[in-house]
Image 1 (tube, rainbow, N blue to C red):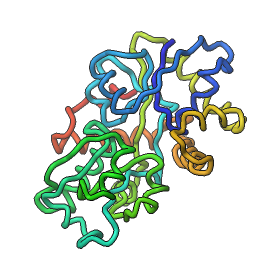
Image 2: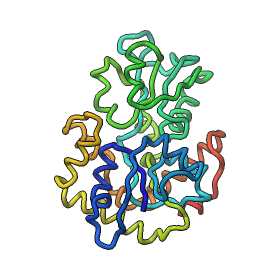
Image 3: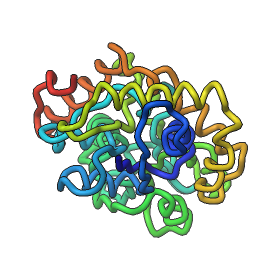
Image 4: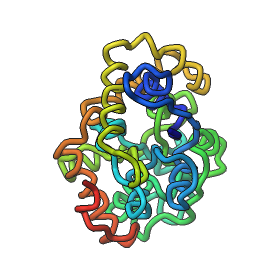
Length: 279
């Protein structure tokens, strides 16, 4: 069976056992590493592996052909995307200063972008100017060097942005949680509807449980793909993004997904969906 997920520590930690044949009864899995913006488009175009990690924000475009797998993904609290600006510039702490400005985002079909657009509608009069899509690891250098006015960052950037001379303008996660009381839906695992999803859910859930029970087993695999991330930052990444929602989406998880996609549809940011298709 073919699967695609990112090289980020939370994904390699979660899927280490599945990728290495350590889950009894599971078939061999062939892994493709790809940025989530790539897998979002693969899913929308019915390309790539049968099982993919995508952004929850991309679900409305793919639910006809793919089912949401309620484990293995990333939801949580205190783990939202950040809006960053250069330290010391005029208006750095005032969202209104972003009106008409150039802002980098990692994907237009990402939860980060949806949260940003929903936040901006409340906080940036007239909205931002140009939205520039670029790989997430290029955003902080671009803001630091003055090529962009602000950047929306994800992943380990929340731990490393001060080293780039950047400062936090807004935490999309804190805003979302205070506004809704719900966790943030970030990355979803989806599978072709033709697959035996019950077995797949069982294999993924057992891979999550194996990772927790044997945290050192995946260490080399995680660091090999962690893009020169330090071991401490990689572990902080895992601690933040791998939690009980990774084992089981649960009612709070489904409620978070429904709230995000429902709001985004009302703002015209995603196509409306039948929420029953999520389950």
